[in-house]
Length: 186
Figure 1 (cartoon, helix red, strand yellow):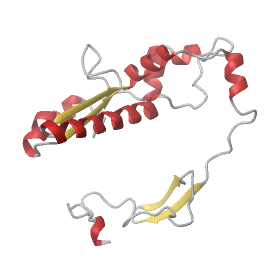
Figure 2 (cartoon, one colour; figure 1 turned 90 degrees about the vertical axis):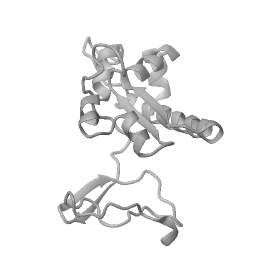
Figure 3 (cartoon, one colour; figure 1 turned 120 degrees about the horizontal axis):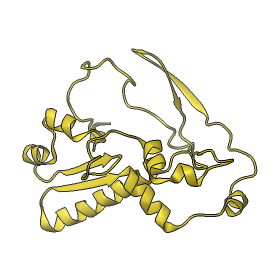
Figure 4 (cartoon, one colour; figure 1 turned 30 degrees about the vertical axis):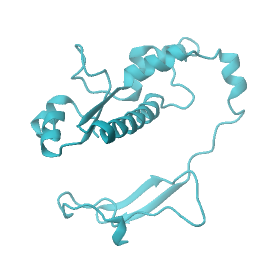
């Protein structure tokens, strides 16, 4: 799974074809801002770029000034859900037919798709949104070999399964052994 430009993946030897040759049966997931074909396919970008390009920010405008949608992020979340659905579909197909598969998602494509689903008027949106803004997220601070790391805490805390991380967070590049963590050994 990656969200890099195609030239970088080719330079690293990680094109979908190269990955399938190294690991037959792989599901290669690629997320790009502007799609996988066309004149902007090699441009980098992120959620707000796709929002601006597709008119989401303009549709949320106030007093003639473009605004982010209420949740601020739109395409990142939807793209992740659609990529996960694509992976599940590829896994099912691979189980029946074998083979390697590509899952490709575009942030701008996601924004266009979401727009086509329909929008709320400002009055409808204000009625559906909470009357006060959500409180800021709870943050955790963890010590790492590279200094303190502050991150957003998981939104839900369960008594029997509190949030935890295996090993160290943020280690110097190249300091870890190249091996998979084995859950069965834990």
